[in-house]
Image (tube, rainbow over the protein chains, first blue to last red):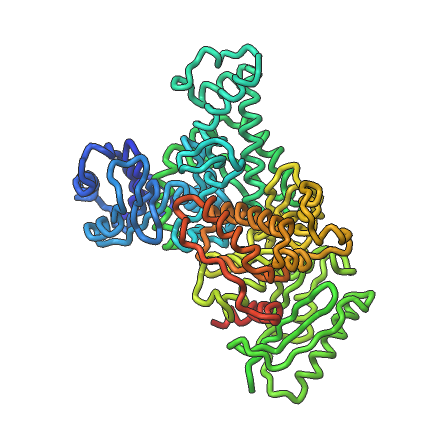
Length: 315
Length: 315
């Protein structure tokens, strides 16, 4: 028998799962569409059937199930009003999965899961104090301090994307203004592109693209070809992130910061200005101590992170 | 025999110590001047002699010694280049006190000690996630998460006073600009008073006071008498603190925030605008959940907090 944890990454479009051993090896994996069912219970039943087919006649010994999900709350075991899920209210996912499988089940949000995955299976092995920043449509963060995820009293700690960096700044989906993720995220890059198009007279290939057709990868591609406007977009984005991270460091003093998610594929276009601005803005106590790096987990990061929720307790 | 921890508050002017039992009761206390000796070892020898006199023929059973000191580093046990001490470099205070007394000795900075003291003996009993903000000449902070002080990888976490809240803002003693403590501290209140005097034509009793003669208590007194300019100073100070705390909450999600130190005596003059701005700026997840309160520890807070460093490990 092989001791296995099932890691589940519940996303807005698909739910990916994987059978992960304690070394982070995937023995099997798959996915189902997330939102074909009107009722959350029907979705769960489909997930159970799919997983049970793989468990039957296997030599897997199921140790537990870890779930990463938007607005997943570690303390309550519920998914609370996730913007990109059709089911609203508090979804008691931990209670329901526990009832079915009778093994330990744990839930957290995707960024926290990524941080735990990085610690168990990626570049943060042996680190007790670090930060993972996920750069996708928004900006998520998972913070590990003293060897544990920072959850806060209510399970909602670690919302670095919603630090207000510019009072009266850009409108945010959260209803406030000037949040970091309105500047630093794939969406933020789009908005900054239009800011720069308004500001400058440069020729730029980005002038031919509508707001709705633009994406961050196109801006990165333009920058890599030397498009000055696109380069300025990344310089601006990196500066905003570096400034904000300098403040986060003043609070948690991490040894390393890992980046993950689509926008992190922009690489040094983004990270050079982040590094420069971070060091420039750090209090002297923290200067030249912090490593910035891209996550070592590949495309399986989300399910590995979810599985790490359980494996972490076995160490 | 009474089990006793000695709490030592090493300040720039005086070193206070107290014999504290597990309930936070002071059985004896006293102080020596901090900086009469050119050499740190001579200072320590005076401290040892003073304490030993009280230990001899007592019925105290010494359990350990806790120290709160400026730039006191929990991880290294050293005081590192404290601005207000005459001895520079890394002072190996933990090693030296341990060698003398052969009991567990722990060191941290004053704000961290205050946080532990609040948890063991004050208003934070039973809380696992909270924040203590010390408002004195500067702004210090001690952050408790998941029941433990947040030290970071190097022992220097929790420098909320050095969050940059206004890029290109006021010059700070740390060499950067726009740090929170340049706005929110006794010194910050003085600076804001002069900002408001420059801005407004109001009559104000503060117009008769030079910068060097002004202190925060005078501004508070003027505000309490209805001086409009002084009232605006506190409104501004509270707004700056509320904005910054909203960002700290996004990172650590505390259940409560405690205030301590000279400036906190301004009371609701300061806390009303803090509360209003904090709630206004919080991400929806955190609204109407956080308690703001003044520390329940009185004048003995510093020595109680230092003693809590040891007592905390006995619980």
